[in-house]
Length: 415
Ligand SMILES: Cc1ncc(COP(=O)(O)O)c(C=O)c1O
Image (cartoon, rainbow, N blue to C red; front, side):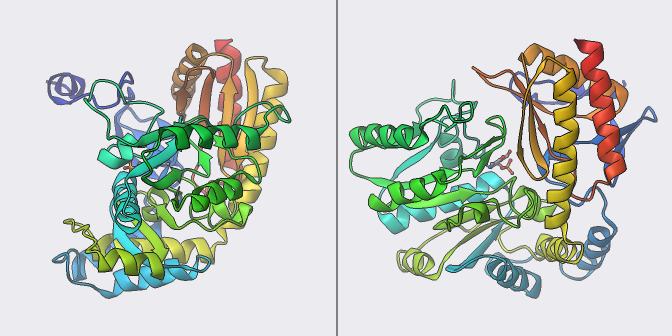
């Protein structure tokens, strides 16, 4: 039996309507994937938006070798140096009062822990999030997720409310009025138990939508007026991806709880919840429980420390800003020649390229893969297909230019 026969026979199809990528990847290095058939494919999604240092970064490989051979995993109540070092270093990279850290494994898990903490600390249970959000597949995270996957899984958790994403053509959207009306609706529906609002500073699965400047501060005020905590989910945007260490820095807004995940492990399963001493204190007094098998695991915490080392040493925040500007210029140039491209947006190296239709997006994705470029397109009602372009922060100019060239050819051949 061949590989694809085994896939057909044994693999659960877990991606909704999506299919498995028709390539078998046997090796990955830097910005490239290498297939069994001998093809070299440029990875413009950093794996699943996680491998910010590219694949098999030598420093990460060295840390994994060393740490796996010395201290891999412990009883969940035991702490170790890599864990406490990472907690301190994350706190040092963040503004006050964010200084208490919980180290976990995935984005959904971190959001689960954050929402659970917000409920315990406020003594309430209602949660507000964007109508195009993606916060993960576990219960509280999935119930705050509206971009897909809501149908067919039984009753939703009571007290989850969606608000519209502030997105519209430049200058056309009165987002303050939209936000006011959104909270009028939330207030009307609430049973008086609003606990938290969880949002991404740039909606990624929602179509790479950056929040208008000022929105996050206004949202924080709406939350605090109601005694709600603001949770920022920086799964994709934290740790230099958008040209700053954290996306929220642009807005000068500090969340009550921050979650980071994908980019922290740079390809390995590591996530963190960060909050203030005050919130942690109240949570602890009330018996906060989030005891998992892989909480505070030394192996991936050591990787997290190395990720921070490389980001700092190689100034990858600046590099992401510069590479992002180069990439966006190139994409705007493509947009000027291809009528099928309707928008280029995003921040740093998280860039969205919108096409006129989602069928076109799927066809361009296929053609890119054929030509040696892996791209991911999101398909959302009311929007064409949107490519989420997020190469590793370590990608070179030459690699970015190669990706632009392939995309150019794919757009030309498909339209
Ligand atoms: C913003 C955001 N939050 C949470 C998640 C969930 O992370 P994970 O798949 O690691 O559980 C994702 C994953 O795509 C995400 O993009």
